[in-house]
Image 1 (cartoon, rainbow, N blue to C red):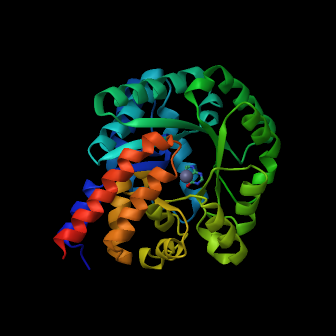
Image 2: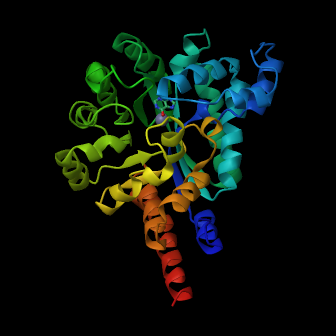
Length: 345
Ligand code: HPA
Ligand code: ZN
């Protein structure tokens, strides 16, 4: 079934945020090649088409292996700037008003790239996009959970001089076998230093990991979280706390968390009163930016105008913007809903 033009127009027109985006996962093959060439790095692929053909994943790990490989072309501050700027240029064209971006410093510091090089390039692009497009942003430092807590602690220490540029810390990479409890001490320290916290949980890992993220890491949002539906008590907890889930539909299909978009549980989670948001995760690898994620969900699950606008409102509600910063966007979405109601009367 194809979308009615009016719903597609609504999705494109709605003011939106993106709250689950790994900046390294926005590296399009064209930019990968351009940066590899100027850094004199030889890729094992001969063309952009060959790179895209390799993006055939069967689970999270099969994706991560190629995602870390792609990130190796990033060496200089300008590379991190160009990567981030390309993403923000795209967001400006999609009516995305605010972004909260993950970066994985350990993917770079492990290769000898300085923490400072990474963050300065990303930060400058965020500042420039605010002046060029009025897109506001926050930065979230993710620890790689397949590495040790000691290594995460070292990374946190490297981040302290740049504290004013980083809003929160998060947890990503291989989930199963690396539960949130492994990082309790470093998250305690991060909160003491004034950072907010988030964590990937319940993407491939069990509902127990979501409980741990809430109770041990004291997160403000759960990234993915779709396996919460297996645990009724957890559903109740998430609902009562209005705990946001940053769901990434195209990612979930590409990494086979669900077989098919029609089987995705997003509509059920929304109907049960959870604060669900739609995000792209790693758009260069999963075949779509945030708008394409909305369109794919709409196409498969047939959401109502009210549900689409609720998802966009949730994206502002779940963000780290202040209430005063959220208000005009939410008002605009309320007006859009009224206009839709008038035009269909
Ligand atoms: N899950 C875990 N780690 C990641 C992801 C993801 O979806 N994307 C990039 N790193
Ligand atoms: Zn992610």
